[in-house]
Image (cartoon, rainbow, N blue to C red):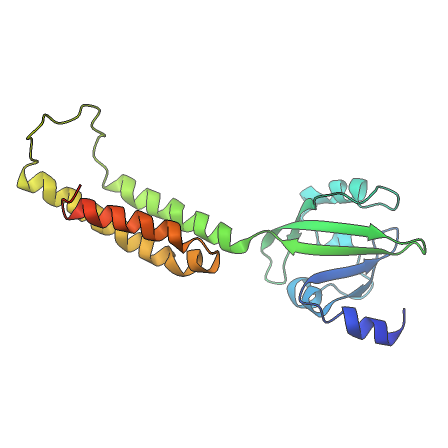
Length: 190
């Protein structure tokens, strides 16, 4: 591979590795070096969580075809964190392979963690769910209505914490609908 070729592809903002048939790393993109920091003469397998090594050996081989979807593997980052990654591979006639590693949607995982936390927060304050509809004309007592408004306010605050992440994912329209509905419930405008 020429130096001019390496300068071109190595600058892409994705973790890309050039490997031989035994998965020994020959070259890495700048993003791959930054995210995984492979050592000199390392194998791609050295970057994997032990539970993913056999899967990689079995599926990342020349002649195994190019999957329509990435192969999910767990890789270990520079910080020692396990990252779920889709690995796309392409093998060339010269025996070299390109492995493009795409970290699964980290933003979505962060949102899922926050939603889990919010769910736990709401469970701590939860009251049993009413399965019977109130009689027509029934108005909740002041104390009960105050507790309900308090829970709705907590939910609104927690949803506002998610706003930046949902805007990044282009899902803020859904958030706005949920918040509007909760606000109308909080003010008794059902």
